[in-house]
Length: 182
Image 1 (spheres, rainbow, N blue to C red):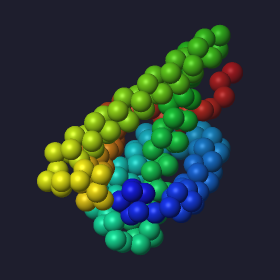
Image 2: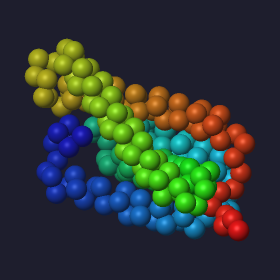
Image 3: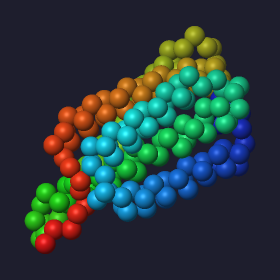
Image 4: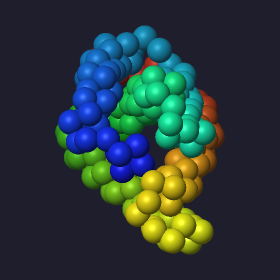
């Protein structure tokens, strides 16, 4: 996106600050409220917000001000991974006996990191292939890059919607989680 809008690195870095602050707040708040709200509501709400983020970027015009679509997309993007990871980790840990919870948590973390890596590769392949097949002669031009980025954002949106469905199906019987068991 920096190359599409032809921004200096410092301006691009500053634009990421609000999302980093929100990510820290979300992790803290999720940990504090996870026992109060049903897991399915947390997952569906955060997944929906996470799906809206790439949708905003897919329809974003590179000439629009940052505040029109990129800023809300940056904020909404944080909901899905931060809330899903916390809820998933707690759910997985609760299923196992106390003596193996640490292993369950470690395995969940490993699978989550692997899934993120696969997702990033998929988005990169989609984006790069669309950029390379674009009608632009200069494949590093903002127009060619934007074509690829749009395809990547649409792919992220589709995966976000899929996450909503998988979460709804997988957690249909889940209630509140994170409650201390005696």
